Image (cartoon, rainbow, N blue to C red):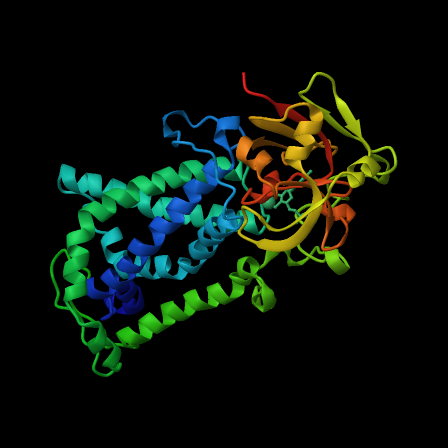
Length: 422
Ligand SMILES: Nc1nc2c(c(=O)[nH]1)N[C@H]1C(S)=C(S)[C@@H](COP(=O)(O)O)O[C@H]1N2
Ligand SMILES: [Mo]
């Protein structure tokens, strides 16, 4: 084959876009430099909110990657809604920016030889961790919120350890590249770029180890066009997803909302995580013969639903905020958990172990901390929005606690074991 027979292949391999250069990479880089720490921090907070001190964060045993744990607060009640909404929402919105950043540096990813010194080798390895980690976190995160557990490992475990690989790569990369980023941002004025049309777009000067091409093609797009394309992509993702956390009319635009499909009727018309049928909850389990068993005191206390409804009721507006990023705020009525603790004979509990009548599944139990039991709005809810809970939302009784991750708002509660301090 003659060299002249394959100009297209050559073109691709030689990466000749005139937009590629330090300035554009630095602009994408600074967006990620601000956004990714928020995604990282809220992700780590989510692990802490799950209560690793009770062995109920996943993965349970993380060795020396153990985070400093603290009792997750109950105020403000929308705290987890905010942190997890940000984690998932911002994580998704930044995907187009991550892809654009990767596109902008792609010639360097294939630089050969891969390393000429030890320092460069460290940089290359950190780059592998950064890029591999970022793509891995995006893929596992997206698959989790779309319920496609196609991988043969636990999402939480993979996402947690993947995060540390990514964080390490990110930290090294920022430390090495920060001066270049500053230099890049100063190399052009944003105002000038926003005024430059495609015809007037010129490539950055070529440097041997730089990003700009040696022999650039004519521009097919201006730099402002590239920024608009990437920004538009991010905005589109935002519109398609943010509604699941923000709620109200924006929810109608949240077409990527995975929980929009199963809902209830009337006052119970809001997202259902796992339906009663899916959890194999039968009418016998939750009907006349249902009892709440409370232990921890001198002897067990057993209540039926009539006894619970006869107790003083409390109403609170509280969100359910799922790890998947969606949330919904409803008006719940039921018996404060602290009243139940007193009735059980443990007026000052340090924790409580809640169990559902649901037999299988990882979400049929939760351990609650002291502040989550003693908060006046922490409820064993019997009603929502003025009517009895629907079977899908946890009838006859469910936990609802301010700022608690959704997963621990156990539905179809069967027993509570209150634990006093030792
Ligand atoms: N018994 C039981 N309780 C459960 C679950 C479950 O699968 N089984 N799912 C949890 C999760 S992950 C969330 S986000 C909330 C959702 O509550 P909802 O279905 O009423 O919206 O319930 C929680 N309580
Ligand atoms: Mo959840």
